[in-house]
Length: 428
Ligand code: ACO
Image (cartoon, rainbow, N blue to C red; front, side, top):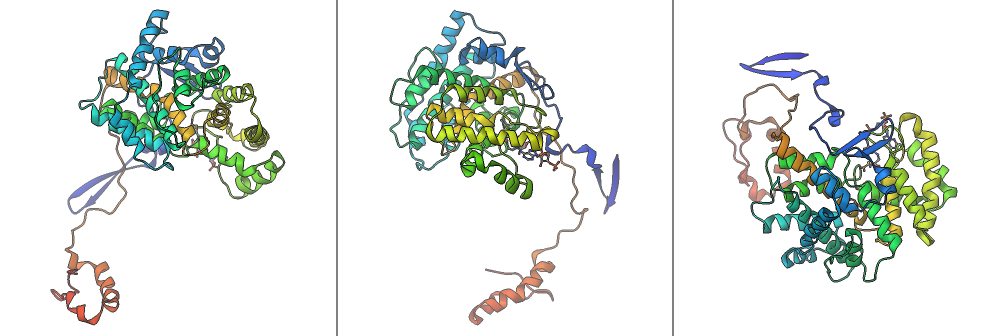
């Protein structure tokens, strides 16, 4: 439905509200072979493989990274070579490390990742190619290194780059912490890397796709995606969920807290709800099982008890509206159980380190196979065409001048110049 508006020879078309899809809900922006999300059944598949099956078969995160960048799973030899490219990426330039070191210790890890990726963009004029999975693998390695340097920076430790090992998870944990990582923590991080690796086109991937659709370099696409991930409605929710559990403090306070905050104050329950899933997010189930496998103790065990009690109340109250736990509900507890600090957006940064593979895989797929500039429209609803009035003729200025005059010392009153019968131009 279109409405024609005539004004001073200028014609505008104002479309009916149904033309605008609020929040781009149910708008499809690309074809993909990477990830399929069935929001009604709560199913997630990567190139046809169910995420639970991938985890159950004990796959390494690098195998799934390869799947995303090459379209099929690797043989043992292909995996070895692929890991070699990732490991080349660990050696980020000293200047990039130094850039991160300039930030305050209170900085957000995600902001530091953006800083690091921007610096890499600056150090690689021309950027990376869209048709080269090997250099995409190097970029993943660079993200692992940047995340390790960023985490160590906010933890007050001297920077240290990951070293080659038998898995990305082991290399990363070895770089962040100064001790040999426990096996179950290596496994938990490996599973977390897989669970967060791709998820079709959420806000972050879409933001990155918009950037690379202009043929900006891959690093710039990652920076755009990181910026969109940072907010509490997307990846930033991981942090908010932990704050929420801490705020509640004890399972006995869950009912009271929920009634006060979610029912009365209409605050969103963080870690619940999803644009696509209208049932339990399969990643939330997997993260919950991972948190159990880590045998949390002390403060994190208490938060896990709060989480489980709050989940029951949340599903009871919101489940009928299709609002269930999402991936971010239990993932922070897994990161906490591995030993990462619950501050400085560290958990959102870890999420980003997983998702960088999905971002890049979408960028390559889009630019190589279906490239077109992403440039949507906005329906204009502002004033009709009108004549531009010079500053001294504007009513608003006229209204403000006497007030300004009264606030000015009398010695400066001449600064207000009267012109053309109206109040004049302000020359200060
Ligand atoms: N708690 C309470 N009510 C909720 C929640 C929630 N977590 N999520 C949605 N709702 C309600 C809304 O209030 C709204 O109710 P109304 O129709 O009565 O007004 C209705 O459900 C629809 O909500 P929208 O915000 O329009 O849903 P949308 O699809 O735009 O938002 C989102 C999805 C942003 C994830 C939302 O559920 C939310 O803010 N959740 C909390 C933040 C969060 O956990 N984000 C992580 C997402 S997963 C990820 O990024 C990996």
